[in-house]
Amino acid sequence: MSIPTLERDTTLDTAGLPDTPWVTIVWNDPVNLQSYVSYVFRSYFGHLRPEAERLMLLVHNEGRAVVASGGREEMERHVEAMHDFGLSATLAKDDA
Image (tube, rainbow, N blue to C red; front, side, top):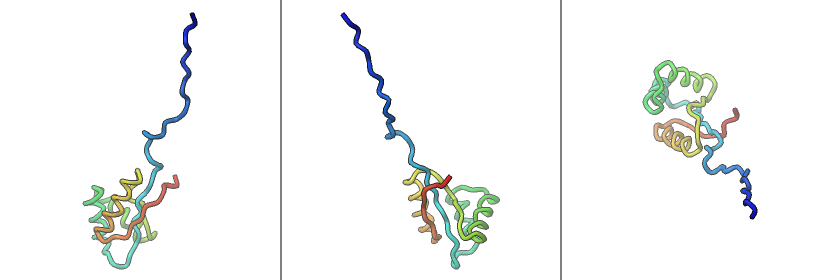
């Protein structure tokens, strides 16, 4: 009588792995005040004032800032929220 051998499945199950990282980008516009953009970053993302102002200044001076990163669906929700606040925002795959 022989003992059956078990074959090991070495395929990678990617179903439970998180998405490729995505980012939410807020773009500069000629409409919104800097104080309002900082307020949105504080109220929506929960950033403390120094971080919210740092991000706002990036938007103002560099034309854009990455304000969040994570899974695609979450970033889509953030982009939609930024649009609801009247800010210009997009999502993109994270280059890092």
